[in-house]
Image 1: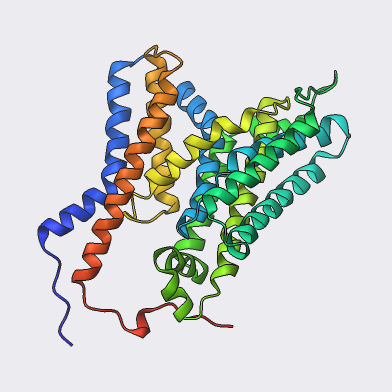
Image 2 (image 1 turned 135 degrees about the vertical axis):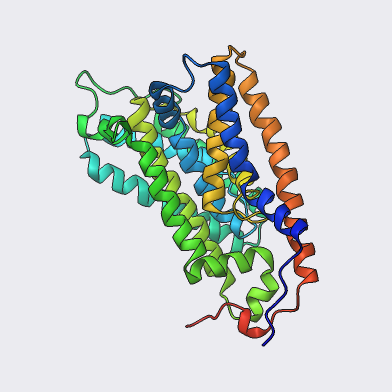
Length: 346
């Protein structure tokens, strides 16, 4: 057999820029802020604070990414985070549940909510935007009912130290939540890039008709994607409770936009044109560096939502361009045979 010809130099260079350009921009941005703010920005204290503050947005971005792989969107994640956070505080502070049992119940509850979202989207045939916006509103109503619109404040003895240590602990001199994010990224990378589950989800997201033709049970795997997203939202809610130590019924909404910015911007890196775990991690890092840098430069409070909104628009545009570029490249490649498609076993 004759070996397939190597792609032209220009295409290889374009692929490298597309795959690793955001990573290079992250390094350049860190260098720029370090030179501008040499006394405060490149310090271990600042890096630790950024890692700690951005761990929950990073987890939520990774959770939002999973349904995006299947070309669906879960707009309920911010409301789900708020409910999980409030439920954790309610069960530990007001109901005196043991904190390990509380964490388990809340995380499994997040998975149940995600599964319900998937069922509504797939069986009721409601667009994921509308369906999850509706379920998110219901989750917000439940949060208000549980709290009666007021904050949940622990008693004089506070929360168990072992519970708050879930967020406050350090490992190798760095905040332990950063290692949670790394572990979650590794798990999602393995699931999406190395196991059949990931291949099925990507086929569903790129061409549902092809998925049906090769026998992939589309409904089941889309529900799996939403359930995985809900599970991660539950974990993030537990960590948010350990971080804030009070139950705030409206806190989750502030995390929705940054999560989608990270997930969509991440689809332009590492694997351009498709949502992926490593790209999402890179996107979250560059957002964290940008927000920390402009904050230390003395930016006004309104700069943060402006930064998030503008970055979201840029991310959507870049993701669309990367997807169109990938489609054009596929059209110039030889057609794939049935041997190239993922095999489905019962």
